[in-house]
Image (cartoon, rainbow, N blue to C red; front, side, top):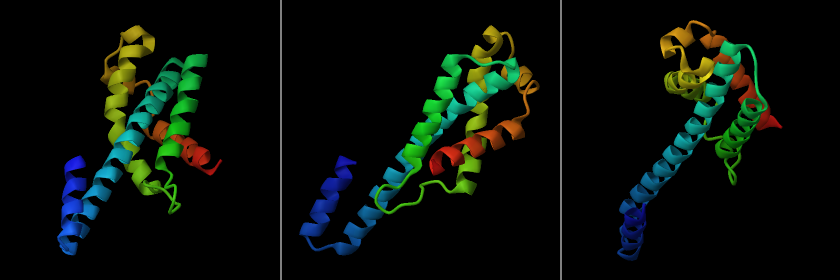
Length: 145
């Protein structure tokens, strides 16, 4: 990113505004990618705990706290501060949750039932579509709060 900023500075100083605009677009895309990666990371934590809760049919204070924090961080990271709106709209949230599911399931399998099930076995114990819909509803509710 520092290289891009230096190149942007040089493009502006030399009057190459087409190059400067291209660099601004690239920086904007890099920033957006970083935001989406951060959101996906919190989604992974959210899904891990929702999977464990659904599979084990119980919760702990720690899991509940992790869910709450993950939701808060997703809402915070997804919010565009100056222009309003969100980085990921509802359709993009659905897609990001689906893309995050396999990793979350793999990690949840290591933790749920003390790791006695594989990810495939754990998947059979939960309703994927219902969990993803619940996660989305909780994210949207937290964003609106």
